[in-house]
Structures are given as structure tokens and as C-alpha cells.
Image 1: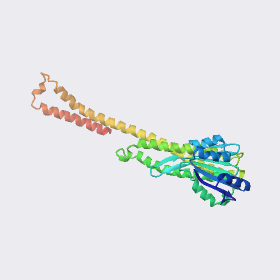
Image 2 (image 1 turned 30 degrees about the vertical axis):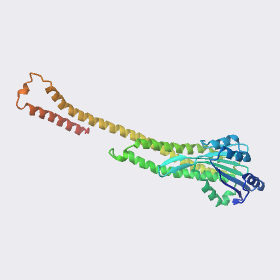
Image 3 (image 1 turned 90 degrees about the vertical axis):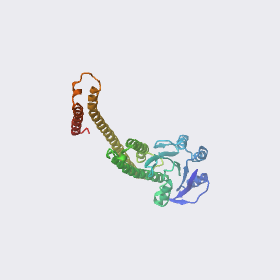
Image 4 (image 1 turned 90 degrees about the horizontal axis):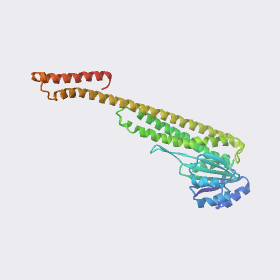
Length: 328
């Protein structure tokens, strides 16, 4: 469905025809205006008319409809096609998800196709409309503003993940008897999946941003390149943050596995120590339970208490020895 459609002349929103085909003709005829049309999860039938009116390349149209694309930048004869993946951080579940945004830039037009709810296009449009000096640079300004907003949000999400990782690190190194340490391995794995989702959105975007910051890209004038270089710098910062999170997360996982191994060894030592202490009286009782006919000590008056004291003394000696070695 079409969310918004407007003509911008000299950086300001102006009234225009309701039909976007007529609006595009008017924008092109004036020479100093462009049309920005925004769509949210359009169907193939809805997008057919848009693609035919704007002359969009069939391969780009297919990508825009099917979604599930990697961030990329493609140049066609009549348009520039960019795919960006906004990141959404859910504070209630502390989870990360990625949506998709496709942007078509061409002669006096911008077409944005949004999949999901994570793309901040409404906020970007309002901000640009409040800054006509930026918007008067045309469709390239829209591409820059959208990229800048999404990449800045990457940095915000990376900060949220840093806080979550610190909490997770506290759980990993909590005392072994703490209830918060339960299911730690599952939380580490889930967190690693979230970091992977972040990296799938942010890392591949580095190449398109570097290309936009360089010369020779159609529909991107030279005066816009420094702005895209600024976005590239912010993206590099976000990627460095998420790579640091990934490395630290791997270290935490290794530390957790090492802790589990140490705890298992401690448990095995304790079990072995108690089994050894139980084996002594069991052995003595087993000897006297074999019912031999000739056992001289059976006729002694103090034989029973002596054997009991022997077993107790042996168990006590083993207990003190294991305790001294830290097995108990």
C-alpha cells in the first residue's frame, strides 16, 4: 500500500496531483522538484503500476517484492537501487530483529519500499521537511537521510547489546549455587544469534556506503559524497562495536565451558571421595559376611566394637585426607 506521496520543490512539500503518475510528470516538468512515494509491503499487483510508471528495472522490482535481500547497491540505466536492513531492538524481550528497506533513486523521484516496522521513514520524512536546505538537494538527500538514520540506530542498538552482554557476563561468573546461573549456555547461544543478526544487517552495508562515498555513482553528485563518508564512518564504528561484542561473547562462552568443566571435575572428586569412604566399611562388612567357620576374632568379646571402631577410624582418616586435598 502507498503510505505517503508528495512533491518537493526547493526543499518544501507542495500540493500536487493525487495520481502519482501525474505528480511525477509535474515534478519532471518543473525541473527543480522531485516526487517521493513510500510503500509498505506492496503486493505484486500494487507495485506493477509503480514500476511501469517509474521505469524500474525488473530485477530490482523482483528484489523489492520478494525481500530477504542482503544490503547492496545496484546501478541500472534509469535508477539507483539500494537495500538497507534496519535493526529493531525489543526492550521487553532484549532481542534483535532486522527488517528491510528498498530505495529507488532516479530522475526526479524516490521510491521507498518498506518490509516490516523497523524503518524510521516517517521520522526521516518529518525531519527532512523541517530542514528544507537539506531536502532541496533532491533524491540523493533522501537516500543520505535514510542511511544516516538507520546507521545511527545501529550504534544505539549496539549500546543496548553492550548492556545486555554485561548482565550476561555477571551471570556467567556468578557463584555456582546461584539460581541466576541456570540456563546460561542457552542465553549465551541466543545472544550470539542476536549478534549474528546484527552483523548480517550492518557488515554487508559497508561496501554500498563506500561506493556512495566515492565518485562515479549515477544520481549521486560529488557534493553529496562527504555526507556519505560521514555515514560510512558511523557504520565503521557500529561494525567495530558489534565485532567487539562477538569476540567478547566467544570469550564468555569459552569461560563458561571451562567453568562447567571445573565444576564437573569437582563433582567427580567429591563423588569419588564419598565412594572411597563408603568402600572401607563395605569391604570389612563383606569379609565378615562370608560366614567362614574358622574366624578367631569371632570368639573375642571386644571383636564387634573393635571392628566398628576400625571402620570408623578408616573412614575418618580418609575424610580428613580428602578434606585436606580439597576434594570435599
